Image 1 (cartoon, rainbow, N blue to C red):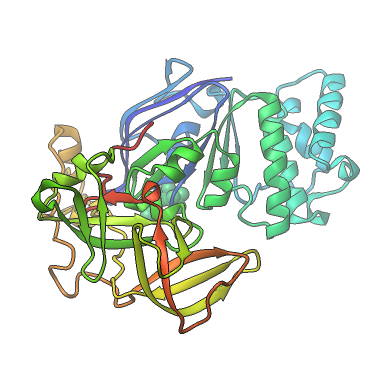
Image 2: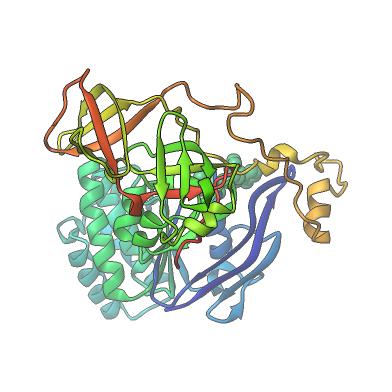
Length: 427
Ligand code: ADP
């Protein structure tokens, strides 16, 4: 078992490409930490720096309290499983799993015992004498997992180990990974772009975007109380309703979110009211998950929106309704892409670039001024003005119906126009 601490870790690839930007993160002893984010956000780079397969440009990596930036990979006691767990094709399953122990010249009786034990736990004991070429994708990943875990590493690193498998196999192996890793108590860092995998497997999730850490917390914290609009939208199996509103505080009696055709008021007793009121006269973004909205009768007098049902969508286990209600939905604000602002990379010339100078001089990052949402007609407000509502397994409306939906105020998330939470998330 081992703890992992990343202290302002930065990775700049040749060509001046900033892949990971001053990232602070800690995996506790025995923790299952999931790195989640869209493709290209720097997850694998981070994992490879922890494994020692990629050099750290700046910042420190501590493994079990020891500074590990320059520790050789073999001295880190780390095992890694990749997306297509490359196996030795001419060795049997038994030979593949046993390989790390044979290299370490372990006692053959112990090797036999460990291989038998692990192959049972991974449900591949029937395949021990077969070669990898004769196995299914799921079986091959099980062998890769067995080979990684057989020598009981201090740290287990997994890079999208399930992404090449079909849906059924993914679910099955996901449960087995969780059970196996937890029974061994090995600290695990697991990379995925799949929110379901992250929510189901993790003790804690760290979400990245464009090389920058967005949020860290338990699955419930990240889902219910996300730090940014990006995190809220990324952890949403349906689309997040994200709307622009103006903040008003009429006669200081209450806080009003004015969406144009619709308004919602928050009493001063609401714990978020003060923080939101600081934006009086300005714009904010309001996030509402489809399950924070519920159909109500016309006579309902609580916080609500109304409109016309454009369409209903059947998803098997539930129905979604799209309600046209005249409020344009806003695209999720993204942090500026650091690599589009970088000038004059080394490009093979050997000169220290602008980015490297900034990193090593500790100069602050230059960020372009943020536009007010809606200021520029082309700045990305969608024409679509539908709210997505989760109806459960009963389609209470038909397309074309006039409809009203109650807004669960406890589920409303308020962000600045650049996507930061206005009321601080609880961690
Ligand atoms: P993820 O695992 O989140 O998909 P990666 O860590 O693989 O992302 O990559 C992060 C970014 O760094 C990507 O834009 C990728 O193209 C770039 N990158 C990865 N490896 C290299 C490399 N060896 N040289 C240059 N750029 C790289």
